[in-house]
Image (cartoon, rainbow, N blue to C red; front, side, top):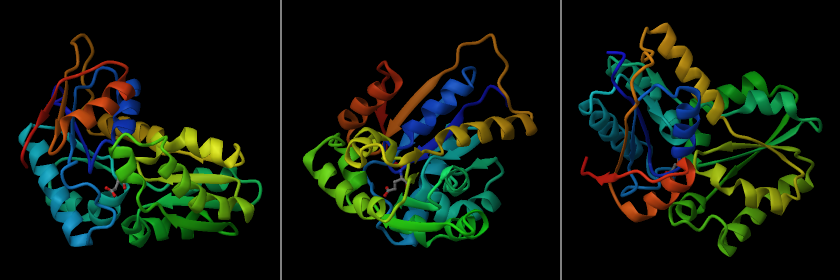
Length: 263
Ligand code: DGL
């Protein structure tokens, strides 16, 4: 059982940021990543549609014999993780909006959160905000259009700049000094965000915390893979291979084979 892979999925390439953190923290673990980029974005689909698509990804990863599933997508975590935890016998790790570290970090007591529409609708976001952001003003901003730009490799484009200016400058002007990235595609926009805001907001990305949680759950469940054997990495997409490949090689500093699959 310990030798099986950790399954990781997202609507697209965003979850690769999470995969990278897991690889760095758990170098012995084999990883199996699925990007459902044919159906990306999930953030603006109906919750039922996003739920059903995510279910197909999970079934695919379980067919690859994964021992655990990491939902490297805030949107799917928001709409479906509770149900999936009760439907399947493997441990699930999800993305939690990083409100707690942002609330600790802010000096102005004002934080911004950039995420998809479906993430803001979910119970998780509202509960996390109520619990950790008492006395803090939270500016929520749906990042319409950003996921598509990242998928297309246009994360430094004029369009990305224009959208980010429109989304972020109002919160900067109102005094927000900390920004939570509530979608796994957005870390690819960090450089542009820093430029646009002139480094006036600290950027909080929960990917590292998710990797830590993955390790904790593997340990508790007795699923840590022993050292001494090379880990295996497999990458699957449901849509365009070339676009995914570009970001994969950039994120992982080397290239891997990517297989296109139907799920
Ligand atoms: N990376 C997904 C997330 O974290 C993107 C959602 C989408 O496909 O819109 O929410």
